[in-house]
Amino acid sequence: MIIQICVGSSCHIKGSEEIVRLFEESLQKYKLESDITLVGSFCTGQCNRLGVTVVIDDVIHTGVTPESFDAFFSENVLNILGKEV
Image 1 (tube, rainbow, N blue to C red):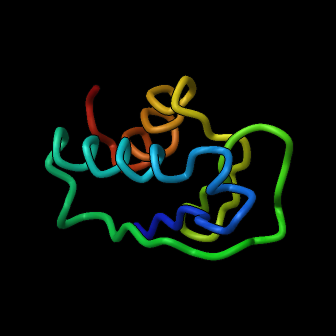
Image 2 (tube, rainbow, N blue to C red):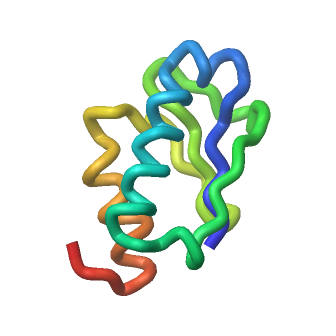
Image 3 (cartoon, rainbow, N blue to C red):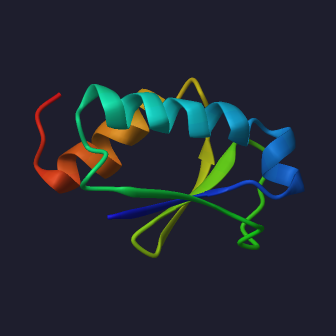
């Protein structure tokens, strides 16, 4: 699985640094470092008013925030990989 986190100027202002940190912590917590490639990307052209854009295996997700991160990670990473929370 490849996870791209937008670090372009708009997403940076909306907290992409925090989203990167949360992904890194979650990958360690669930021991997924060897299953997932985490990369930064520049603007995907999907800017919105709230949150960061994250692309998981070519599926674009917008509006990821620190507050919504746990539910997002569970639904879009753990469920897809068949991992238990």
